[in-house]
Amino acid sequence: MEVIQRNKLRMRKLAATNSNLSQQVETLDWDELETALMECIFKKDETGLPESYGPASYFPLIPENSEQKILYEQAFEHGESLVRAGKIAAFTVAGGQGTRLGYDGPKGTLAVSPINGKPLFQLFAEQILGMSEKHGVVIPWYVMCSPLNLEATVSHFTKRKFYGLGQNNLKFFAQGVMPATDFDGNLLLATEDSLALSPNGHGGSLKALIDSGSIADMETRGIEHVSYFQVDNPLVSPINPFFIGLHDLKKSDMSSRSITKTGPFEKLGNFVSIGDRLAIIEYSDLPNDKALEKDAQGRIKYRAGSPAIHLLRRDFIQQFASGEIKLPYHRAEKKVAHLNEAGKLIEPDNPNAVKFETFVFDALPLAKNPLILEADRLDQFSPVKNRTGVDSLESSQADQIKRAKRWLKNAGVAIRENAVVEICPRAFPDQKDLQNADWKRYDMQSDTLYLD
Ligand code: UTP
Image (cartoon, rainbow, N blue to C red; front, side, top):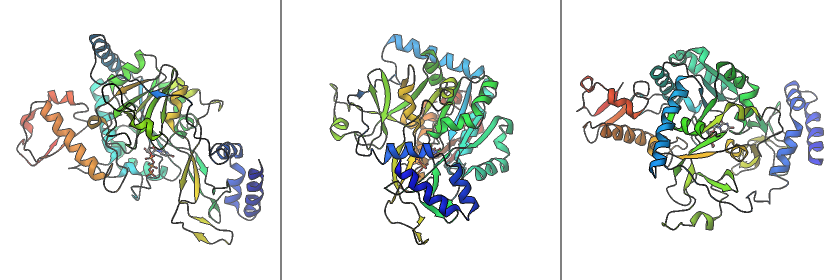
C-alpha cells in the first residue's frame, strides 16, 4: 500500500537520530495499520450497515409467561451455583481516556458515591468482596488499563491495600495502542520522539486479556465466564447471578444486558438481528427512519439499547488468540495535537485526525447462541461520561441516591423524603440482602443515611 510505504520512509528518516521514535517505528504493527487504514480511510464511503436487519429480540426483565418464570428461577439458582463454584471472573475496561469528563487521573479513581465519595474502583471492589463473602469464594478481578494510566491505577490500588481483595486476586494490564493519522492516512507525531498513540478501543480488551496472560490465569483458576463492565458505571452489578445463569443455561458464547432507550435517538448502541446473528449498530449509524419505526403496540422497534454489560465465555475469548478472527476498526475523528512539517506544535480547534478503535460488541456476531437480557436502567446503568448534564457525575449521583431509596422502599423501610442515602455494596451487594439488615443500627430519621 502506497501510503504505508510513504509513512515508513518518512518515519524512518525522522527516527534516524531518535532512539525512542526509532523503537516505536520498528515495533509498529504495519500490517495492522494497513488494515485500519483500509477499513477506515480508504473505504470510508461505505456505510458498513448490513443489507437487511431488524430489531433484536431479548429476554424481558419480567417474565412474560410461566415457562419463562421457571426458566428465570432456574437461571438465578444456576448462576449462584456457578459463582459459588468459582467459575466467574470480574473484568473492567478502564483504558479509555475519558476526554469528555476531563478528569486528571484514571476515571476509576474519581470519587462518585454521594455521601462517602467512594471512587468508582472502590464501589466495584466492595461489590466483588461482598459477593465473595456471601458465596464463600474468591472472585478474581481483571482490570484493563492503557499504557497511559496503568501506573496511576496500580498506585491507587496499592495505596488502598487493594481494597481488601488480596493482591493475588487482582490483575492489572495495559491494552494495545494504535497511531493516529491525518485524514489521508499520514502518521502524526505527538512530540519529536513519539508518534501520536492512543488506546485501541475497548475491543482491544479481548486480545489484551490473552496477551497479558489473564486468560491463561483464568484457566488455571477454573474460570469459565468473564463478566465485562465499563469503569464509568457505578450502578452495574459486577457479578450478577441471574444473568450468569441464563447465559450459561443457554450455552451462549457472549450475552448482553439491554435497557429500554429513553427515545429513538438516545446515544446508545442498538441491538439488531442479522439473520440468526446478533449485532449492535451504533446510534450514529442507525438511519432515522429505522430509529423511528414503531411496532404494533406503538413501542419503538429499536428500543433495546446497550449499557455495555456483557458476559463472555473464556474459551470464546481464546478464539481471538491466533489473530485469524478479528474485530473491525471504527473511525473516530478527533482533535489530536501534533507537530507540523516545520516541527511546530499544532493544537487544533476541530477534529483533524483519525483514531482507530475496535469495539467489544463487534464480537457478538461471532458468538454462538448469543442472548440479550433486559435490565432495569435504574438498577444497572448511570454512567459518568460528561462534566455536566446527561450521563454526568451529578446525574449519576442522583441515580445512586434514587436507587438506594427504591431499595429501601422495596424493603418496606420508611425514611425522610429528602434523605440522601448511600448503601455499602460490600454489606448489601444486592437489594435482596437488605432483608437481613439490622435496622436498629441506623438512624432512619437522619437526612444522610449510610447503610453499611
Ligand atoms: P468511552 O467510549 O466512554 O470512552 O469508553 P472514554 O475514553 O472512557 O471517554 P471519552 O469518550 O474519551 O470521553 C467506554 C468504556 O470503555 C473503556 C473506557 O475506559 C470505558 O470504561 N475503554 C475505552 C477502554 O478500556 N479502552 C479504550 O481504548 C476505550
